[in-house]
Image (cartoon, rainbow, N blue to C red; front, side, top):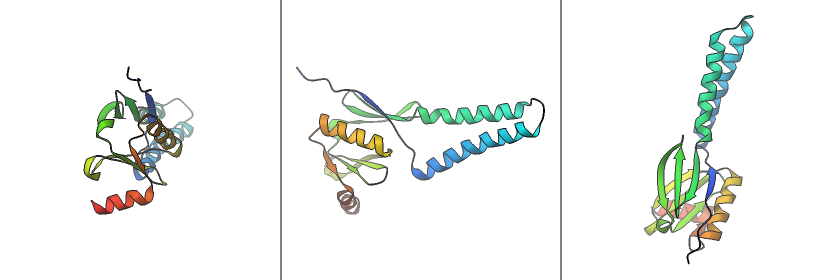
Length: 150
């Protein structure tokens, strides 16, 4: 009988430049609402609306994750499934000292790339190493060689 693989859920990060812009917009919206609230001595709807907009902007970040389910990597952005990569099509996973993870298929072609923080990157690589030992894990030097050859 085939052993069922454990399902995991790992929160994804945005590309670093997008992540800075995203969180800057959230903080800007929140502080504009706070400044408007502090300027007026009575209740006003503008600060309440700005706080609500900031909360609505935060919600998609909680629904951006990577799920390992049914022998596949499922990528969810804002709660919507965007990409499904079956483990059968993955030959190599490359990682760098930063946040980027590259997924390679046959003929060393890049299937997908995504970003994880260090803790989640370690969690994913340990899971892949334990559950799918045939998938080769590449370090920074190997990833650079592959990217230059393509």
